[in-house]
Structure formats: structure tokens, C-alpha cells
Image 1: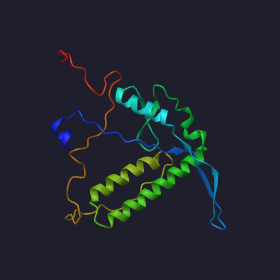
Image 2: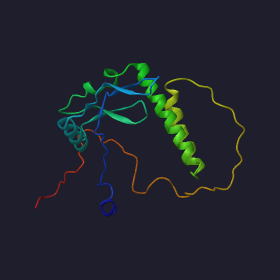
Image 3: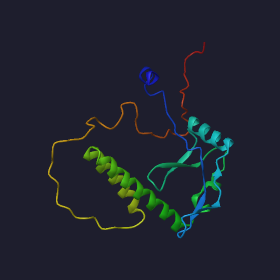
Image 4: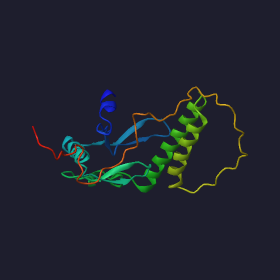
Length: 186
């Protein structure tokens, strides 16, 4: 973090999922035994390198994904067509996996909230989950009387956003990670 403070706006962090996709496991409802139907398809190293190069050069193209995050739709030197979830799963399976994911995240948020998570953080998490769920199905908004403001009993009363992390903003194509100086070179 010392580099971030010494060079504001110059240090960037990227997170990559270097796993794979397409694995399919069925569970026998009678015995509970798991059976591997299809092995995972791993992301090859050369494609991962192309994705990283594209991020550093600012040439990757992104689109908004099903969960509200962005994903790469085009990169130089890599074919991403093989990694479309629709190549592996039906629309119904995808929606089922998303519903399961949202349900699990909602339960975990409630579990953490019971341990003293601030109410505003819990509500923010639920709004995000509601937005993901709304893309699947329209459900009626449950009615509840407004809650009265009560003093915070949260275990954590600091701003949940770190001063070191800012929202990622894509760079315009052609503007690299490292600016080119117009001065003389040594």
C-alpha cells in the first residue's frame, strides 16, 4: 500500500478467475451419491496471458454480466467463444444455478448480520441480490412497516469502503496503463 500512497492513480490491481467452467455433477436423490457427468474445461495459460495483456493495454472489450459484474467479451489473441456458459448449460440450468447462488449469499448475509453487521451494509447486500433475482423472475415486494431508527449496535462502525480501493473504471482503448512521456529520454 506504500506504492499506492506514493504513486496515486498509477498502481492498479486486477483479479482473475484462473479456474474453468462446464463441470457438471449430478446427485442421486435416493443415495446422495455424486456422479461426475462432465469434467471442467480449464482456461489455457495462453488465453489467460492474452486477457492480462489486453487489460494492461486497454484493448479488452467488456459487457455487463448476469450477476451485475463485467466480463470480457473480446480480447486480442484469444477466442472466448468456447467459454460461453450456454455451450455448457441450458437457460433453465443457468437460472437454477443463479437462484441457488443468490439464495446462498442471502443466507450467508443474514448469518453475518446476526453477528453484528451494520444494517446499511446488510441492506446494500440485499439490494444487490434483489437486482440479480429480478432478472430471473418478478416477485412481489413484501410489505413491512417501517423500522424505527435505533442506535447502531454494530460490531463495525467504520465506512465499509477502503480508502485504498476505488471502483474499477475501464480505460479507453489506446490509453495504456503506463502513460507515454513527451519529454526527453535519458
